[in-house]
Length: 236
Image (cartoon, rainbow, N blue to C red; front, side, top):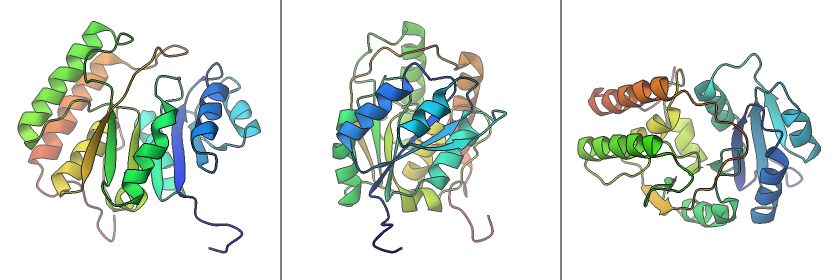
């Protein structure tokens, strides 16, 4: 890579579907926090989300018709150019101002992944049913993986890009963040935690609770009990 086109330190990756009410605000917050970051969006919107994002300097990859959150997130993670990839929901629920702190720990080699957990306690913006389901699955995974886990579904994490390139995961179906946390734990990567505040979202949620719960259970059990799950082979 030439000096005119250096590898960015940070990519901020987001998945969008009809987020035109929030995308400009979120990009503005990212620019204030990490001005030189690549902002990468995989978009499956019917509204002006992609147009707005591109006008603000984001790199947009269209995935239409939609192929689901998991496929879109895999495309974003694999396509990101930065040494550290920070995932962020594009609904103004996560604090972009802590991105430099998360990135610093990964760049300094202290962690390979940092989970920005929403669940030090119940967030006011999270319905009780969602909170209890998240807490229950986290407890289950804590028992099975032998470490204290609080949030398997956080939409905000910092990943070392070379680690992502080494991982094999199933992007079909909901709840991909579960694999993206538990597989690195199983394989012995350095996984850290940072509690964050979680705000009210802008726009409507597109999550389907029952399929997400089924896939969460499936991913926990499969990752724990499949011996060779996780690492990409030379031919995969």
